[in-house]
Image (cartoon, rainbow, N blue to C red; front, top):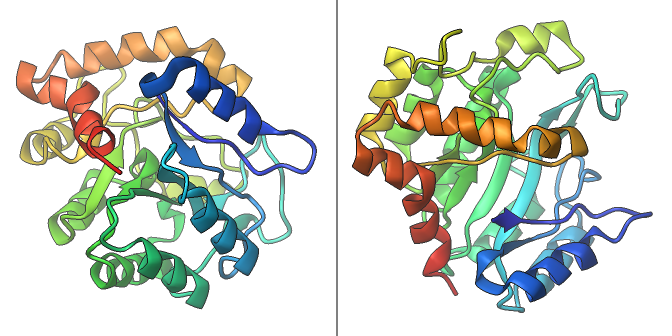
Length: 256
């Protein structure tokens, strides 16, 4: 399992994840803690803390950097309606310059509810830091066409398929919800043709994931895994194996 904590003033999630790593050893791939408090640019403190964590080889990737995260109906609400960090920030550049060429993947969370604003900036970020491996959680809830644009443009971007098995309707803004792409399956859980084509064209760039970040997601964990076994069962065995585990083993297993 790839796990990371959330920086929190009241709960010590970092210690909990570290204890899991100590107990299960190589079965847990630990990332640096993520922060929901970043705005505009990454703070000096966040950059320093992340780079300090990475001096410890127990940390094998950078946990989600929340670049574009819309408010959810079941979560905290912000005045802006989103948590946004500009990919063009000076501290963003400072962090990625330090990471470049060091085989430390970075989870860059951005949702495509404002593709026109964000794609040009991420296109530039991925190009500027070709020596960094970027992991895009949930495929940004993007359409197949948008995902194809990203993958065809940048060989250093990998995608997790968490939450792409279902409709994403939990955004607090109806307008932003409508801007998202739909799931990669139809109502009968059959792979849609445009997504099948993507998975078959880029079999080494997708990874199974669940995003079990809250109790209600853990409660559904067996159901989610069962659904993904059915989805991946519609692909050839080599591609299914690569997406289910092979790509993640390659990305995380040989690092540091």
